[in-house]
Length: 468
Image 1 (spheres, helix red, strand yellow):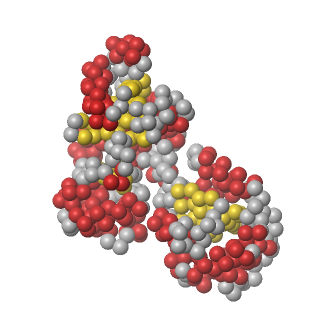
Image 2: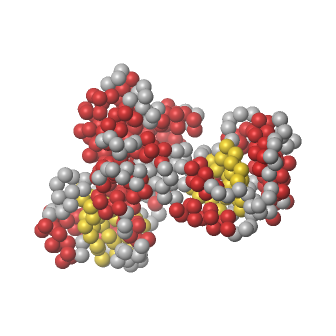
Image 3: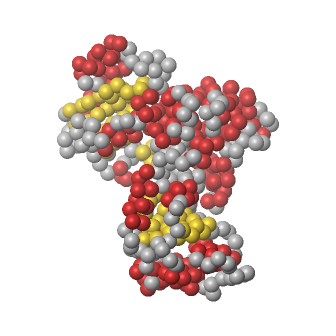
């Protein structure tokens, strides 16, 4: 199943149609769908798709050489290989038509031979940039791709024609994986596994959400996602144990540096800060600050949050209960740990979905002002789940999210107005607009008042549908 990625496919197609030489960099976390995106793009185009491995450099060169030779030759000589990587890259110039050449898992390739980057730069400058080749370098180690391939000191710096950091799918796209679920069930599935295509395809809408969680996440013996975070971190990090402790601390609600330091027991705050910086580079966590902050990097009100929904779920429910799960007590963990707390867990994702929905409305020009920042807000005076703000226009949109089984009433709106006034006073905001987001709709009284006061009312159905 291939869903969405229209923007990325359009960008790749435009570059291919240019008839000019292309050097495109695609990178992103494992399981985000990079390879599937490239397979979809390459379909019905002449292409070479080389997937690097951890094997010896000479074996990699031979495998790549045979793909190049086989592109326009009916037979490949046994044991054929170009004498060097430079010769292999130069051979791309002579390929007929307009070939797409994909080097997938490129970070494996350069880990085995650091000189490949300089060799490719040399051949690109001398031959490839004047050819018809579209060369795509694809990698999963975000830090390495950004420093070794895209960085200012990297040999290929300034050569790329385009690049994309592929992100997880949003809620509306993720919901398409579960056409038999209700919008509420689609949202909850996204809240648990997030927008990583591999994780989404693991779940099935042929069974209930809790059944999927029990079978694929909590089953220590046959659950396809049970060991996923451990494998992910062990592959990319030298000291995974410390990172596990940090991620578990954050998943349990410790969001400030001093709280994470104390809860994790990893070391001093300075040591923890270095680990957190690496997790941010990997795009596994984010340091959030109030949307009112003009210089977020200098803010002292930063809170750390796990980006990936599935990692957040795993470190909240699986990691702390591994002993019980290894004993085969998945049913007990599901009923005693997961099920009673799931709505509280999902509420965080509901707020995130609301902020992204408001951002989509902003891009569609459906907000009453041009927002400069969209996020949330907190201070000693209170907090706001959603805040879109324009300091120059002295305007803001504030929102409250209620993942509750009860319809939202007028009291929620009045409370939101009170907290919004405190934010407005702190941030010199004159014009405030209001929005409410509800799991189960709104009372009739609130609907009437919302019409009079032009308050936006949005349900989980709106967020899943995604039509801003």
